Image (cartoon, rainbow, N blue to C red; front, side, top):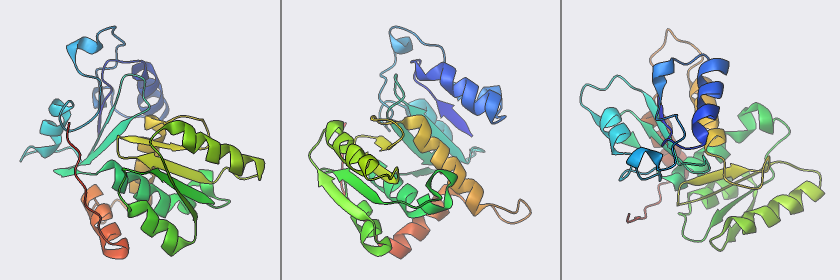
Length: 222
């Protein structure tokens, strides 16, 4: 696994969570020292600005099965498999489709929401699995209003996301890239309970999701 942190405030958290708490190799996290100029790099975690990570995952001889990038303050995230890119729209939809198997959502997932420019993959999940669904204008504050609504009703079962690489839940009123990546690591663990069997890859998980829920297309220009 490899995580690129973009020399922002997320760096120390990544080292603590992924290396010290979860036992990942120190070499699996890079650009973790907070720098005022982000080390001369653009902080956005996407295919354009995280080229070093993309090149590593997409190399013909790549031995990395999972990669992730965060922006400077850690609210946005990009998830990659070996020679495979997951759109943010698919990422939040897949997390939602698997949520009830994750410990935090053991009491159930109540509602999901996406911003207007985000693909309809999350809509398909909500319809099939029976979650409340909301499409909101661009702006995280609209998700915050929904989080408040369900919290007042006694539920923290809420997941939301946007095509601009933001994914979140009701545990905080902001996007949380580290949370999203932890969800993906949990999903990989759930799909690979027996190390003696062939590894179920990120591409396998996404492809199976498309087979079950259909595939939505859109294009983002950076």
